[in-house]
Length: 175
Image 1 (cartoon, rainbow, N blue to C red):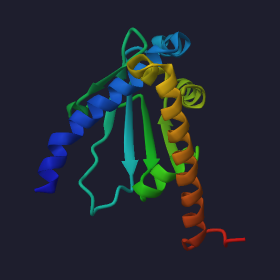
Image 2: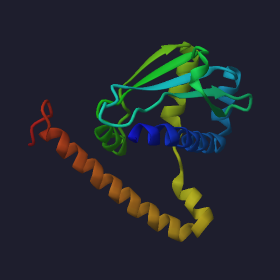
Image 3: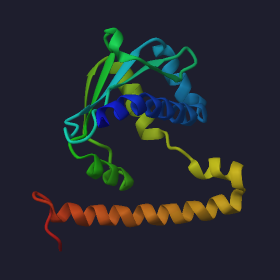
Image 4: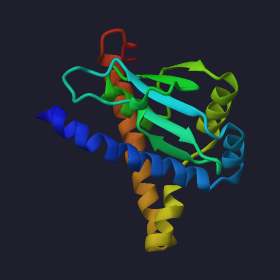
């Protein structure tokens, strides 16, 4: 039954993720311009080692549009990807906490080297300015205050994550 829910919600979740990626891209014309030469190329993002106890996580298959944005497509049509990105997802909770600490997940990339370079540039140089988006909804003062609270919470979670990592097997012992 959980698998049925997963097959229903996964495409909707992937669509929302694609919208978020496009929102961040659209705020930076240079980023879109870097993707335009790769229009029509397909990128497959695979969560490698996804825990079997969790509902299956289908691959996210994206195609670059002529505008330099992403379009999510169904990967079941058999069209090969120009670039395959495998994200180490053996421990999704640890991966999420590490991302709060600013760490990138371990990835393996196969395929078009030039496209991989552009995507690497995007991951290194683009950030979602959520505070700016919130300012449009609730005003700059409230958005700034909410941003301060969120940054403090993220720092606290990052410290918690670092402390938990030291306690795990293979982690660095606490000082």
